[in-house]
Image (cartoon, rainbow, N blue to C red; front, side):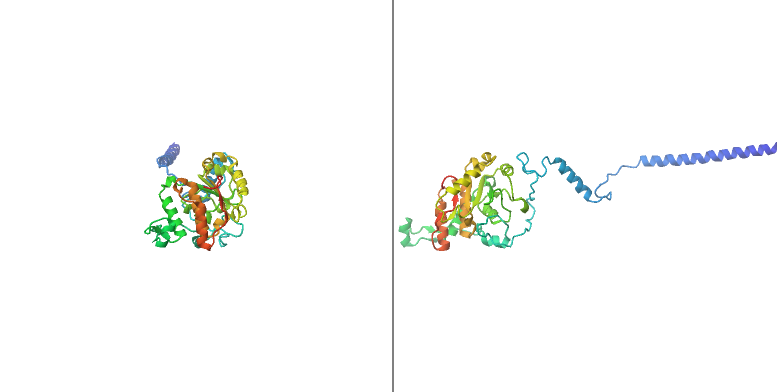
Length: 340
């Protein structure tokens, strides 16, 4: 009997020990589960702190752009800027190939970029330091011929006179009054880059260039893009045999002008509706005095009310004679009206 009692006590003690061990394990597990539930959630940056490569976020942006692009790679009336790459207006100009060539070669006009130092020399910009249009008085012997008094003032040169005239007239405009210009080269639908001499001419004429944000490889545009930009002035350069020195007939210019304004969707463009479309000879890009004449023509087309007393033909003649010593003969521009 004693042996049986001892065995029973040992079995009871063993059962108690087993039950005690199970309770300890159950309590520890519940405590761990409770600590996990009470742990606060932490936001994770999937492209940064989570350790994923940065390309992940870029890929997500590309996917989003692709979903939002209704017409990828296609320029249309509905979405003319679908695949047109443009500059951030605050981004620096990129260096492009071909910038080491001269301003223009014979018959060219492609709007290729030129280095800043060449652009500074080749493009006659407005003189910020100009103080007075007139710098001296008319000599007594000239007063009678000019029909002015002897104390009247005259400019020291035609370049000075027209430079300061342009600066003064366009400087009177508010920023919101300055028009946007679409410049097309002799090649149809090819516009100009932001470091080109044509671009500088637009700015110097007191206007804005609608293509200033285009990348160098995206200078070919279409009707949809142009109509969406809705320029207030359209300037197209033509070959020297259409307009230029020695040209006395405007028949070729008339045909180009008619084809230009009859393009698809162009009837609704402000420049076409307001008769502010201008053809310029490429010859006007080849010398500083002629570039100044081009600025005057653009400014007068944009704001005719400011230049009612200015004769562009006389300006071209005076500037050419002063620069070369002889008057120029030919027709350098056409605006659909046979003159201003």
